[in-house]
Length: 538
Image 1 (cartoon, rainbow, N blue to C red):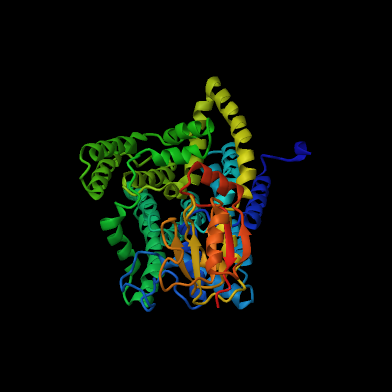
Image 2: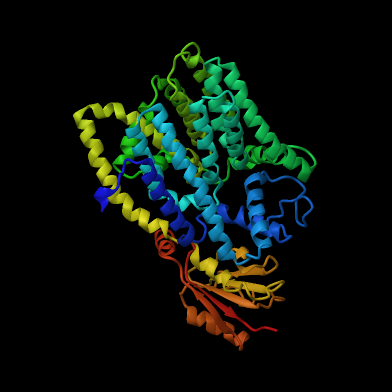
């Protein structure tokens, strides 16, 4: 049967990509990280219910009166999603999230589609097929494509915009490209670094019409999504952008500080597995001619950052831009079109590399472009028998490793016990009820997703140490108790039965396989077993 399948057909690639995204949308429940749920789903869904979970809106009780730096564009679109579906009577949290993941999965197909078109346009069909298959079913992509991560949700609009810059057949293509990339920036402010790289390409080539059309598109979208929206909410434009800049200048550099300058390169090429990831890395750095234009200034930046650690990152970036400008002047008139992808991509990676706050997911936004550049860049090496044979062996090894990981992650549910614990209470009347998160064994508590309980007004208290009183606060009484972990579980339950004699088990929630693995690897991933007990207090 496999012999009848044309694996070089774009339709085959897109069909397979769609199937895996649909499977992930249906079976891969939960959320991957804190941000993709609590900063998006909880906020958006609470707004649709007339509540403000994170107190972001200035008229909400508990708001500090100043913007915290959260773009309302992506969370606002999720708010519209919840409003529409709840209007039609779909209120079950798990059902809502299936539709939410389906929409994300379908939109992510644009990445595969335009990734293929970009690769063929600047290279050839053979490389387009190779890049297409990686973009379609790289083990981590179906799982991530259906999540509510702004790093992933911005990619389809970014790739679509890049395609229009490459295509450039119509005088308005660059305006539309700017509009789309401007939307990606509004999803995630850091994509602005990528847009600067695209604008720099046209600027250095002295292609002023293209420069102004692209820049106009970016500015128009950004003004509409950030200027107008923030004016309506805060009374002045770009309030959240200003809050984001202020936060990152004063506090962002201290949050999740990381001194590993090569972390993003490990992430990008690591997800492509060994040995293919190494070959893609070689291809990426070989992809454009005269790549020393960027690599040499980047080396200077690294030395400055190592030997002058107190020097502000902004001054280092200015040095970098000055060196790149000097290198490019007079050289870019006839430079290959590949630079319109490579320059903004390497700008994006280097900015995140030198900015102190480094988290693995930050670089995922340009992963598809790195894959495209790596495949194209390695092609010239394949003219050598040694490198061609190395590629073929690596390609086979990649699929041997990738397919089991793909099958596992595509159906993997994350944070399952937390979700199921809250979901079990969805029909209970939780308004102003108290829930104790009890983890006095060898476990610790987790932030619980209220969205799945259909209630925003329940209260949580925590007990994580055996020396703490059973009733954590003198005035507290609990309607439900969540017992985290199985350590001394019977003893812990017995202690609370003395206080609440009518207490009964309400549900038990097992972690998923991936949750168990992550908890075993790092107990800080509190993805353990949870038992929900109803105290029947009043």
